[in-house]
Length: 290
Length: 253
Image (cartoon, rainbow over all chains, first blue to last red; front, top):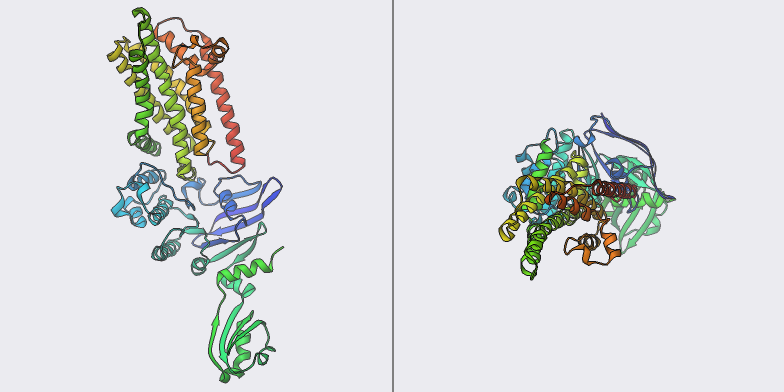
C-alpha cells in the first residue's frame, strides 16, 4: 500500500537548482534509505516532505490520513533539549499532541530512561538524549517515521539495539524513511535505496540491484603464478600483486571465479569480498558524475 | 484542547515556576525600582505632589513589568525554544502555531498579572497608595491588552535567532522605550524634541490611559488609536519577516 506520494518536486534557491523533478512512491512496511553526497539535497527533500520549507513546484501527498502530522514521527539530526523540563514531562507533553499515542510506559521503555524519568532533559548524556528523541518520534504511534542521522552520538551497543528496534517496527507495519552517514548500517537494514545525485533521484532500487549495476568485487588469493597468467581473464578491472598475494577487482565475480577454476590447484586462500555500500555509492557517483 | 492545556501547564513550569531569572527580572526589578524612586531617592517633595508621584510611578512600573515580561521574557523564551530545537519539534507535531503562541501568551499575560498585583501590594504597604478593586481591575485589564502588543515586539525580536543579537535588540528596545515613555522619570524633564518622540511611543500612550483610569479623568480616543496603529505596524512587520524567513527555509513557524 502506498503511504506517501511525491510528485514532480522541484526546488530552487534563486538560480540554484537543488531538486529537479523528484517523483517517488513510498510503500508501507518498508525501510527506505536516502543517500547521497553532502549537499546533494537530502535534507532539502526531507524538509519539503515535512512542510518545513516550500517547494518551488510539485506535490506531496500523504495518502492514509488528511492530518499528516498525526501519522508521522520525526527524529531530526539535532536533539531536542528543553530547559527546566523532565523526561517524564516531555514524554507526557508529546503524548498529549496525538490522538492515539503509545502508552507512557511503552515510550519510557523505548527511551531506556526508566531510572531517569524525573531527571531534567539537560542532564542527560548524548546517547540518552538520542534515545529519548527516538521515543518522542514514536509517541504518536506513527505510520511513517522519518529518521535523519538517527545513530549519531550512540555507542555501538545502542546502535545495534536501535536497528533491531527499527527492524521490529518495520515488521509491525511501519514505514521508515532514513538518512545516515553510517552506510554500513543502512546496508543491512534498508529494503530500498534512493541515491540523490545532481538534484535528482539517480538510483531507486535494492542493494542487490545496485551491486549488479555498479558492483565491483574483490578477489584475493595467494599463488606462485605470475600476473601475466591472469591478465587475459575477462571482466577484470585491475590486478594488484604484492609478493605472491593477488588482489583482483572485477565487475563480474561469478564469471571470474568460473575462469579461475583451472588454476585452483595453484591458488591458496581464495577469498571473495563484496563491495560495501560506501564503495558502491562512491563508484556510482564517479560513474554518473555529470 | 487537552494538548493546549498541557502545553500551557508545561510553559508555566519552565517559564515561571522553575525560572529564577523570571523572579528577578520580571518581579523584583520593577518592585526595587518602585521603592527606590518613591521612597529612597525622593526628598523635599510636597506631600500632595508625592501622593500623585507614588500613584503615577506605580502605573509606570506596572507598564515596565509588562515590558520586561512581554518583550524580554518572550524574546528569550522563543530564542531558547529555537536553540533547543523545541520550536522545530512543535512545528512537526500536531500542535498548531496558534496553540503554541497562544499558550505562551497566556503564561506571559498571567505573569504580568502577578507582577502588577505584587507591585500594587507593595505600593499599598510602602506608600499607602489607595486604589479600589474596580480601578485595579481596570488598570490590569488595560495593561494586559497592552501586553499583547509588547509580546508581538518580543516575537519579532526573537526572529533575529542569535543570542547576542536578541540580547542586544531587547536592550536597545526596552530601556530606551522605558526612558522615552517617561516610565523611569517624568517625561517633562526631557528636551522637547525627545518628549515629542516619547509621546508617540505605545508605552507612553498606555501610561496616559492608565493614569486617566487611576485619577478618574476623562479618557480620549487618541491613545487607543495609537496602540491600535502600533499593533497593526508590528503585526505587519512580523508577517513580512516570517514570510521572508520561511521562503529562505530559516523559520519553523
